[in-house]
Image 1: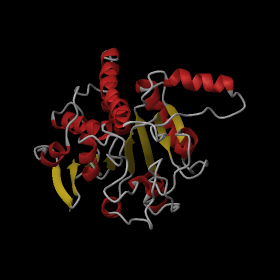
Image 2: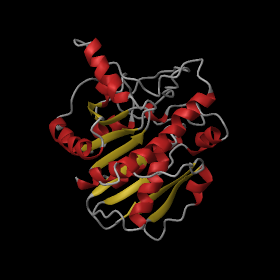
Image 3: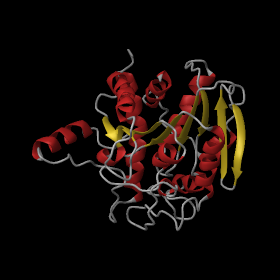
Length: 306
């Protein structure tokens, strides 16, 4: 599972002090090192496939939530490293860099708090896995009326059905952690110990402050109809993970430790970028996102010896 380690290293590599706009994702030419396929024209979504002859397959999903700019940015750097032979893997990789392009354009124009897609649906609540119809304007977790009501989630479903990978990764920001299924319930998967062993390797070398364990126990809330649970339960992908690669607070580790002290008999209270309140301005959302890009660059400087 060295591939899993590689991706988290890239997530902490030096990101430029700017972010790429959606037009860049639409037009980027990676044909020299990957097979590019357009899988949807409206919204416009491409896949990038590396090592197409390998039987070991991993599917990586970036950009489910529009405001999480660091997710697709990390995907771009990951593929660029592969193209430059700075990362070598014997996995076949199929990558979606930007699943939510229409809403991302709105974020780029100033709607920095926007999480949902063009229909006002949270893509990561729209999968047919423990689906629960829900609308919450403040939290922006509208599930849609039925599973797979959205083009974007149907694209992911069809790709997974056809591709049948052994590894699934969804890359987010808002917390700092390496998570296993499940999101909908605080239970463990049958292969939980094996999944945690993999994530412990990642944590040891690259993110010792990261939380590890079921997503439901670590992000601070239950989430229904997620891509993570769908990949594991419905597509039967044994190595399914979600990486939360940035939290806006540089003191997250200390906050969690303090929470353990203050609530010794309770689970620590997590903070999340999902916790948007009515008073939060677009500028505050923007600062949370963009400082994430800057801080990852700082982290790489501090870990230059790795």
